[in-house]
Image 1 (cartoon, rainbow, N blue to C red):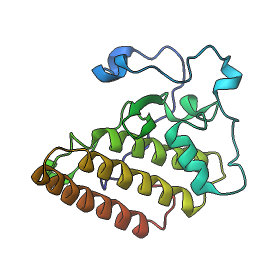
Image 2 (image 1 turned 90 degrees about the vertical axis):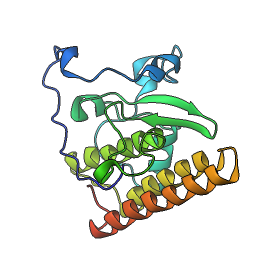
Image 3 (image 1 turned 30 degrees about the vertical axis):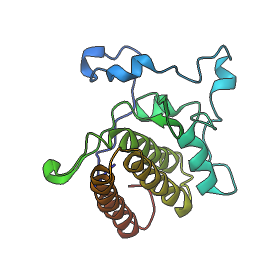
Image 4 (image 1 turned 180 degrees about the vertical axis):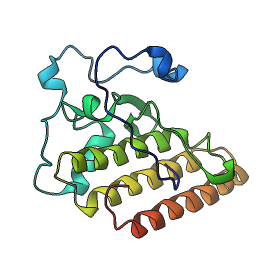
Length: 192
């Protein structure tokens, strides 16, 4: 996510939503195995409903974004989509299928950073989810989502072949990450 105040997605009111109303899933999604579809039952694949667990909310956010912790059981109902897993060269990441890198004026390599943005969008939607449940996550959660976004963009940059490409993507990663972090500071590290 690159500095944007996304309108909150309305919760789904029924299971009869038209698939035509939703954008098509990315083609790469079909090639990625959903880590939660490995034969476990629904109760084992989803987290608890409702209140934010006590403890380190930065660690909690990191676990959500990497898929170490499944989404809350009613996340899809409350937020209107089901996150899915992708495998990157640097580990598993959970994604918002409706997310995207939104950059004012579409400057820079926004498409290249789209996977990082979709994970970041999922993190921000977790902040919104817990806020709607009446138990907002601590500021450390948003800081962790922003830190994962920064790390994912720099991982992409550092994976590039050649010094010029690495320099280019590192520069843009720094610009995007700094903009997001400044926006989080302005918003008091709460739900966007």
